[in-house]
Length: 453
Image (cartoon, rainbow, N blue to C red; front, top):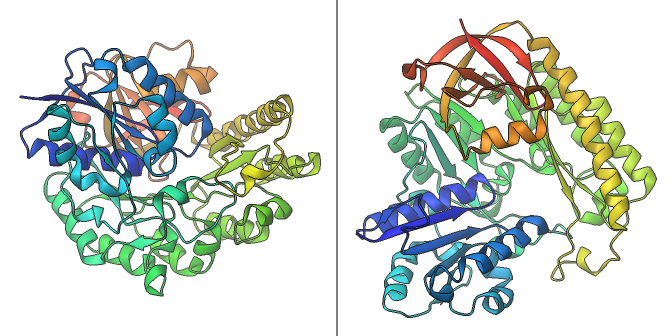
């Protein structure tokens, strides 16, 4: 049986697309391995959101080419093929290529590769990915894409060029996919897209509240995590969304990427809101849900960013204290409007990035103090591998408080109602997939450590 190794970069949507490719290939008799040494074909599912990730993927392709007959048995998938096709071909002229819009044809590409033929499949299409079969890595969690593309025109963004215009998937197909996964044992639903709050706008109406109500009314026990929503679109349905979040099945988790706290920068980026609207969203949600987890994104070093703009970012973090903070250093892409602007000094960008991260670490720790020594209910959703674990790696890199703790054996990841990560050490394997009580013993920037009560 053909052994395939799939390596995935980027967001939860990319994870879902790797699961789709696996299911399609499995139905054609393929199997999968985590051991690169025995893999006959390697698929790299790429991401283009950050220049750092693009560079990492390029190096990875170069390193792998000798192992896979000078690239003949490497398939490059995902977002890179749609906007960086020429660069990929220069990098690996023998590799086959399939873009995010063509993943339904992955079996055809593998068949061609096995015959020694090179295939390049790109070009945008409206593919209802929620209807496609998928293999889930974690049987307790299902990732459901509700749309592709977006209705924005951000000046710096390559992803919108790769994904194209907003295409919202049919509501009945989304519900059918969720219900099928719940029947197969899923206990946690992630709804994902480039901007969940824009769902339905291509059909003339914001349909997210209606979709969420139908999902939450399904007669199953589960928790729902709603992914990223741009401020301009959630602001239009703010009161409806707050009512929906009152449902016990909803994780109290809100991801609203601001990209900058300066209205001048927001406007130049082409993002259709102001910081006052962002503040209104946060304040209204926190009034109803005081312990809600707020996540946001900021791009540091946007070309016209001044010291005053940087101070506004620092002040925002200090005042509104997001629990999760995704910081990106500005990436200049030649195919974007912002790519034509003069890039700021690298040392200056690094300095500002360090200051922002230091502010976030301070405020996030302050946020978590309220959980120390409390008994909280959590859902145990992941058994963390003892080695090669993204959770452990992130823990070591970001939370210095945990650096001295030996927590790699019998480690489980769980979530409370606010989607906080609570790590638990337990020799009881039966806790996976259960709701249990834990006492919070230690806190860190991005994690807490709990003890089973």
